[in-house]
Amino acid sequence: MNGATRGSVAIVGVAESDLGTVAAGLSATDLMAQATRRALDDCGLALEDIDAVFAATSQARMASLSFCEYLGLAPRIQDATNVGGSSFMFHLAHAHAALEAKMCDVALIAYGSTQRSVGRQNLSTPEFNPYESPFRPVLPVTGYALAASRHMAEFGTTREQLAEVAVAARRWALMHPAAFERQPLTIAEVLASRMVSDPLTVRDCCLVTDGGGAVILTRADRARSLAKRPAFVLGTGATSTHMQISAMPNLTVTGAKRSGELAFAMAKLAVSDIDVAELYDAFTINTILFLEDLGFCPKGEGGRFVQDGAIAPGGALPVNTNGGGLSYCHPGMYGIFLLIEATRQIRGECGARQIKGCEVALAHGNGGVLSSQATIVLGSEATL
Amino acid sequence: MDEIAQSPLARYREHLERGELAYQFDRATGKAVFYPRVIAPKSGSPDLEWRVSAGIGTVYATTVNHPRDAASYNIALIDLDEGFRMMSRVEAMEPTAVKIGMRVKLRVKREGEGAAEPLPVFVPVEASR
Image (cartoon, rainbow over all chains, first blue to last red; front, side):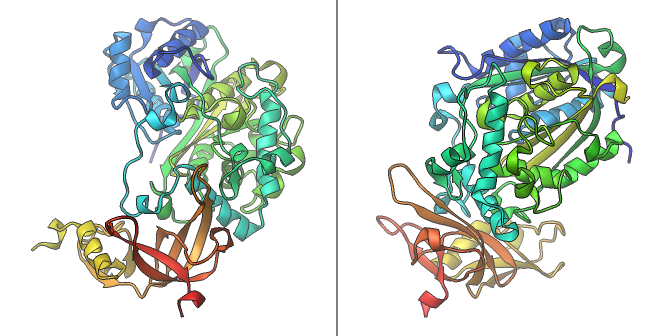
């Protein structure tokens, strides 16, 4: 089975919309459009160049339709795949195939959410599940808490180790001008904060912010003629293992194992080649699970791996250099921001938090309750 | 009536009304199936046999939700001895004292005003004797 070709397409434009708490009355689609305008300016392409539109949000039932209408576009390709926060990695893999097959020339991926402004309770209500809902799980946090409980029982992972993930994210966020959280955080503060769903406190949980993002891709030849250094798509892998947490085959092994294997095989790279890892940290347990499943450490060792600032600035492995969903921005479906940060690291645009000599960046998306998993490996021209 | 045309959820609830936890057994693969479906996962077989669980299982994962304005409560994933897993709650003990690996037994109860639908919860095996 042949997939898309390593390096045949590249990310050429990236941008965030306004983040945090956006101006009153802005819609999710407005934020997609803000980010799109900025991403077009980032690469020097025009709106009329776009002939493929990929979009997802929890605030539009047919996100690509509403966004195409808004933009006045009737693209040859559109795709509103929604598998939660990793949707944008799925979009990227689909865009890669469509671009390589010359079904389109310029692909736009967009996201927007005003969940902080409108209140999470005013978003679409979770589907009633007759086998779970009667027990009143608070989703998604209950699902991640169950996974954390299992990881602690099987491998001796501690709450302090979980807290290390939050503290590392905060230290990175302090170097990101657009980050939501601006104050230092300690392990003791994480442990002492309000318990939400054992063993996860509010500081083990992602932020609730507004925000949007846009990513523009084109084939490699054209990418080289545009404004910024291209971030070539070296590998993609996507999979799912379940929808509801009670149907997850093994709570300590996620689909990231499979998606990572697929992405590394396509990229012809190993985990040791990764200069920076952007891992979907909706909850502190996520980072630990993905470090293990992607192969940065053996299964069960994630808690010990993150100790003593190992993923914080100056640590052994730079992880979530934007401050992550825990401290930078989390509007509900965070995946697109991982692609944006990975691209900027490869370009060398990250200022104080820039990883020196960053040639290969990994962005790993997660959706649902550890349900959908997608891994993207991006590289500079030197990696081709 | 063709089995595939019946609602698996309706059948499941009929059993719960009688105080029974029902699951399905896929004759093609020899594996338990839960939640109940019209065809089996992976095999695609419509040949699903309904069985009643003995109601004994082991806590696979556990958490306690702490609402700001209400009492804390347990949520657990239970591995039933017949080979299927379900979400439930362990009761008759402190919610934070529920431990992974603990043996538990089914108790079908009705909650709330007007005796709503029966709910399959679990209690420690020791407490049920």
